[in-house]
Image (cartoon, rainbow, N blue to C red):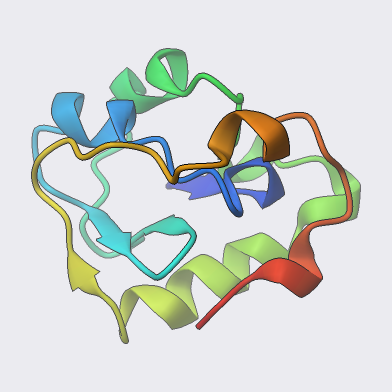
Length: 107
C-alpha cells in the first residue's frame, strides 16, 4: 500500500509533508504535489503534517477521488523530487477549502 495526494492539495501545495518524509517520495508540479508509489514506504508521517488533509492511504482514498491513485503514479514519473520544505503558493489559504479543483491542476 502507498499513500496518495488528493484534490485538496491543488493550488495550495503546502510542503509540510516533504519535511517529514524519510525517503523523499514527493514529487513537485507547478501547483500540486504527488507521492511516488515506487518510493513510498507507507510510514504515515506525511498524513498528520498536511494542513489540508490531502493525503490518504491508497485503501482509504475517498471514492470520488480514487482517480488520484493513478494520477499520482503518472505524474511521479514526470515531475522532479522535492526534498525540502518550501513556502506554499501565495493564494494557498484562499484555495484550501475549495472543492472541485481538478480542472485547476497544472501539469
